Every structure is written in C-alpha cells, then in structure tokens.
Image 1 (tube, rainbow over the protein chains, first blue to last red):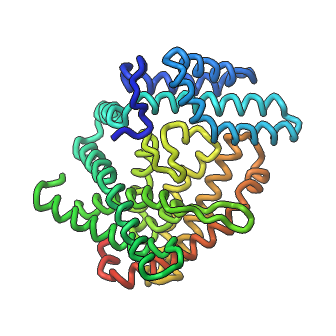
Image 2 (image 1 turned 135 degrees about the vertical axis):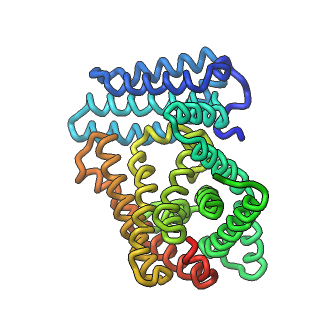
Image 3 (image 1 turned 30 degrees about the vertical axis):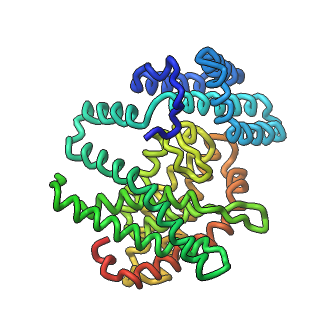
Length: 199
Length: 180
C-alpha cells in the first residue's frame, strides 16, 4: 500500500504523520489568511526550497505534481487579470499552488497506513467507539483488496467483448462489472460472517 | 451488517476502477469519465445512505494519498483545488440520487434511476461544484456557473447510461432490491 508515497526515503519520511498533518493545516491556514498577495508565492518558494533541501529529485517530484494545478492556477490568474483584479489573481494562484505543493509533500513522504494510524488515534481520542473504527479499517482493507480484482474483471470482460465484437466495449462493461461487484461483495460478507463476527 | 459493509467497500473499489476506463471526448472537446457515473450508480444501486458512505470511503482513500481519481490523481493536494466543491458534491450527490430513486414506487425502473441521477448526480453535484469554484477562485456564482455549464451535456449522457445500467442491473438481480 504505497499510494503517492515516494519509494526513495528522505528525512521527511521519518517525521511523524501527525506532526506533518498539523504543520500542513497551520501552513495552509496561514497562507490563506495572510492579507498580502505575495504570501502564497513565498509559501510555495518555502515548500520548493524545502523539497530541494531533501534532494533535487524530490523537488522535481513536487514540481511534476504541480503541472496540472499550475494550468488551473494560470486560468484563475488570467481570469482575474481580465476582470481587473490583478492582485487577487496573483494571491489566489500563489495560495492554490502553495497549499497543493505542501499537501503533495505530505502525501509523497507519508504512507497511507501511517496516515490511517494517525486518524485512528485521533478518532480514539474523540471517543469514537472501537467498533466504528474497526469497521472503517475493514472497509478500507476490503476496498484496497478489491480494486485490482475489479480492474482485472474489467479486463477479462473487455477481452470477452473483443472476441465477440469489433466495437469498443466502453460503457457496455459497466453493467456486468456492477453485477459482479455486488455478487462479490455478498460472497465476501458470507465469508466474513462465517469466519468472524463484526460488531 | 457484513453485507452493508462489504457492499460499501466494494462499490468504493468499483468507483476507483471506473476511473481506469478510457475517457470519451465530446465533439465540443469536453472529456467525460466513467468515474462520476460510479457516483450516480452508488446512489441508484446501493441507496442513499450506503451510496453516500461508499463515496465518502472512496474520497477518504484519495485523501490518504492513493491515486484513485480519474487520471491517477490522489493525495491531500486534490482537496485544495477549485474542484473541492465537486468532491464534496459527490458524497451529497450520491445521497440525493439514492433518496430520489427510493421515492419512486418502483425504484428498479429506468425513470426512477434517471430522475435520481439527474437530480443528485447532476443538479446537486454541479451546485456544489459551482459554489466550490466561486469560493476557491473568488468569482461570482454566475461566472462559476459559466465554467460548469460545458460539462452538463456529458453529465446528461452519463445520467442516461446510469439509468440504463441500473435498470439492467435490477432486471438481472431483482432480489437485491430489498436487501440494498
């Protein structure tokens, strides 16, 4: 279970996920609340310099993550500029890129399992009953287990369709995929009931 | 309990897997992906509560950093963009889709699924998306509506396909209607 996690370790990988989440929250709030148009760009520069300090390859990774958001930020800036609100455009584009880069820095250096542990700990502190936390953990485990299985089933269906018709299968796959998913869910439920008790 | 939990989990997996299907591009150049159709399907097949929970579970996994959104996007970063409203709208939309479909005496019909998909999957999701864009981009609601409108034709196609799939689904598994 690696998600967006970078396989190459950095110093930030060793920092606790809880600390990183709190820092991200403070950083994004600070950048958004600052009344100065350049605050976002300074924040972005700080994130990129931080990334560079971890290694040029890591800064490159964050820059790659910013490709899509940069296009949106350019659109926002262009729109606000045309509307005669240049300062606002600068501020919004900078804030957007700073927050996204900081969030991606967290995602790149923290495994989903670590984040899940932190969230589980926070939910326990909020006195959320153990049975609900267990259900969440089980639902996540089932989802992660079945994503490749469902994708594999989609491939099998696509090939079966291809053997019978020269047309592209596309949307026609979704009905058998949905039926198969529900059947599989009920089989998994029966297996769970046979092996263990869910509170 | 086990059945509800596994259906919620597996539908979250189905929504993720639908993101892997190739996208279609309308003549206007607007791309349509199957993933938002998964949101509508969650509402029409699983019902309001379980449909919304499966979408929330899917979004939770995206927030944890798994690249499950169409185009392989994931991580906390996607929740800071102008599309935040759409992501929130997905969960509310799935709930409303199920709620509307359940109001019909025959929830297995094409009309029930189509009504649910249009109201929940298009109207509610688009309203949330427009509000999200207006807030995140600091533009008026009218301007944000202008940004959202080009996607409506694609969404209408998806609602029609969702209704057809749902009707075919219930025809194949009518016994699941009471359990869902």
